[in-house]
Image 1: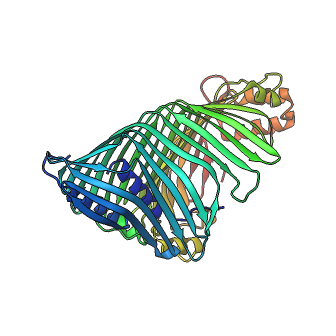
Image 2: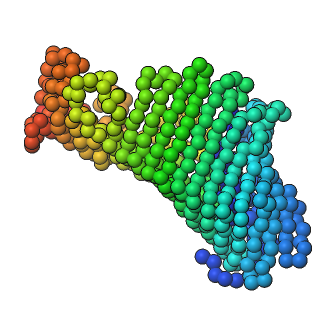
Image 3: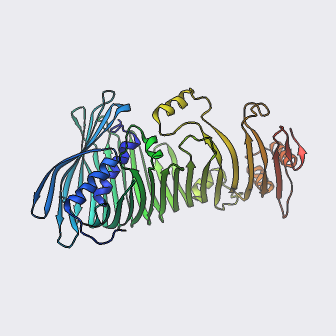
Length: 513
């Protein structure tokens, strides 16, 4: 069952609200309670929300009760609303303002759509020893905040008016400290820094359809740091996110986390799958703006143990490094734009039990394996990735070719396993006006240099194990002889593969096509 069906813009707005609760370079100056509340309203409004609340002033304290924020997403006939409860803004007499909120703050998220089930999710936002102070000037505010614990708990879920008992979903962060600056000019700019102590999460949910299935995951890591910068137009239209990007929207978030572990269980009667994970920490980065969209995820010394279900024996694997990065353009342009993609699975190892399945005699070296690929290049995009109408036209083929590849650089290519290693690098350009020479593919022009070591030793071991017949190994050796020449050192081969724009393909200077 899909409990929430909302676009990335709605999820961004939700994160904005929670981010303000967590946070919200300014020179010391007088700032009033009304100034700070106006800044909150301005931030939420800039994110595309309509904000309302009942304001009352008593002495130096401005109280805003029944704070609600609502966003309509016309193209999906969906409305998202959140109730933040009551907030107070108290002038301290020294030019600063303290921001207060209840220790237990219920939040209600409602999704209404004529084409989908109406869903209401109740969240409990709890804080312990929460303090926040705003200082600076009305359009240049500095927020300092801290809490001994912040917790977000899913309290209840209602679908079409019927309560759904999911189980336990909670996220707890200890020892939170941070700062946020808000500067308002032609754009609203923010700069946030946060650090925490231990982070714990629990997801223990049952089958919402009433079956006996279950999904459980519990985990923790020692702490995390968050650094985020952003800019947004003073008015954002949630129905036209592409226009917001053109008007200056940008966001850059980096989160690092320390060592941690988790345990999980999946019950799908009659089978049960269980496992654990452990890592020394990692980093997650996401950035978006007119220059494109970037994801970068990495983890260090990751271990996975799993058993049960359809798995015939316990699985124990580990990575020294696991990483993925992607950069892609998001806006149409007549000029070529940069892109990048990389995957690293470094120092992969597995238990002797798994090795024993296909190498019981220990013929193969059990050295750690690595896959490392780093690609960059340039391309043109012929539609705006965040424009719903253009995206639909691209998916249905109305736009024709959605884009074109202009250049491709192979910066790193490494594949090593069982005593053999393949490395390489190269570069290509593509002629998109020539779709005939290579049968519909833009004509490439460039080369790649490859080096292969340990291949013959690997083939000998596979023959001894009975996994590769002698005649097949002979065919493989003949193919390597056609495409490669002896390199430096024992059992080493090199190859230079060239592709010409006129259709020629050469290996070490000899024409293959």
